[in-house]
Image 1 (cartoon, rainbow, N blue to C red):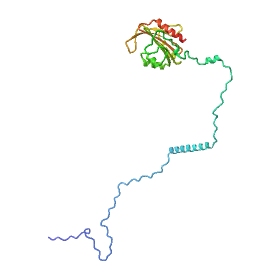
Image 2 (image 1 turned 135 degrees about the vertical axis):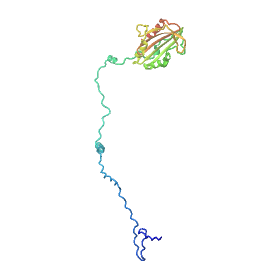
Image 3 (image 1 turned 90 degrees about the vertical axis):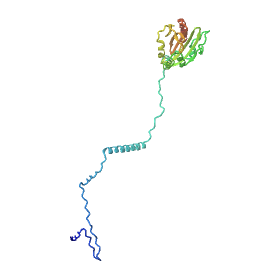
Image 4 (image 1 turned 45 degrees about the vertical axis):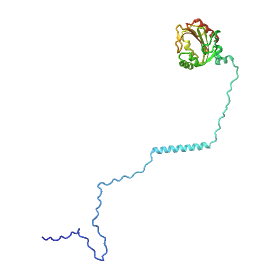
Length: 276
């Protein structure tokens, strides 16, 4: 079977060869470049931005700042050009009072009254009787004592010490001695003038028997025994208390048996007479 040759297609055929001596011509593109397809959704163009206007608050603040600065500068310039103001004299004329006669009675009445008791309190204590002995390590003669030493005589030392200082404690003196079965302690405690009534209210508020008609105090005798602090040893107490001015007088008698009222009354009366 004979097959006829197929002529080549124009696409597959090679380009024609130019004749010799012909000028070179630019070759045409084999295929046309495809055109870019237009975008289906066109991009949105942003609107043009309008110029920003200054805010009213910014303008107000700027005006206040500039006004303050300008006003301060103008005030400083005006004050700097003024002449200095002379200062007032430091010393002025003293007040004058009309001369007159002074009434001594009126001046004495207006002056603060002196303390009822002042000076060395040790000189106001009665002395230990002859034949007596010292009580432990305490001297038998009148001597000064502190608030701490007064508090040591009581059972609740810390509480009594705080009470003394809170009630205007000023100073105190004591005298102590032993005689037979009795032990005596007499103290004079002085408080500040404004706290003396408060300090003595507790002592004078008990049911006391008077030991002297003119004394603002009294005495008391215990019929029941008490224990010395920190021991099992017992004692009987008789005490007397009174006040004159800012000074409180206390007389305490300790015995191994109930103390006779006459003993404490006699000591309290003798000590009271030294204060008046």
